[in-house]
Figure 1 (cartoon, rainbow, N blue to C red):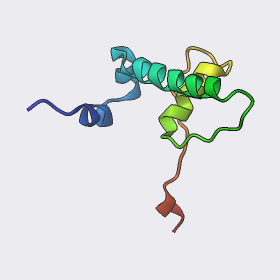
Figure 2 (cartoon, one colour; figure 1 turned 90 degrees about the horizontal axis):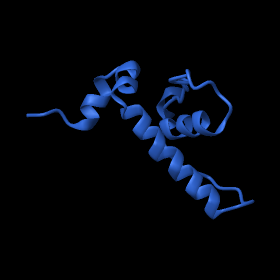
Figure 3 (spheres, rainbow, N blue to C red; figure 1 turned 60 degrees about the vertical axis):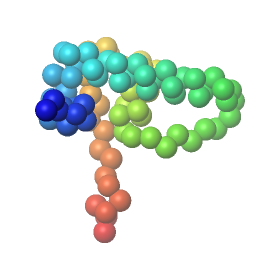
Figure 4 (cartoon, helix red, strand yellow; figure 1 turned 120 degrees about the vertical axis):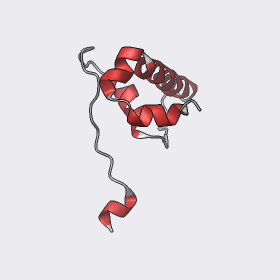
Length: 83
């Protein structure tokens, strides 16, 4: 049985994902969605509830960060980490 996409992504390294182009496709979809939301709400404050990967994709796409940066390695603690 072929591995599910999420299984493959969970086991792959960032370098493997970048090399295979999957990371670029995910970033493309995420940043396109963020841009579309921003364009629908000009001048408004908008809150997005999303995974850190979407936040990272938007940061890497819209801020002046070197194209050589593959990951920001954002730390997003789980709720139960503080319990």
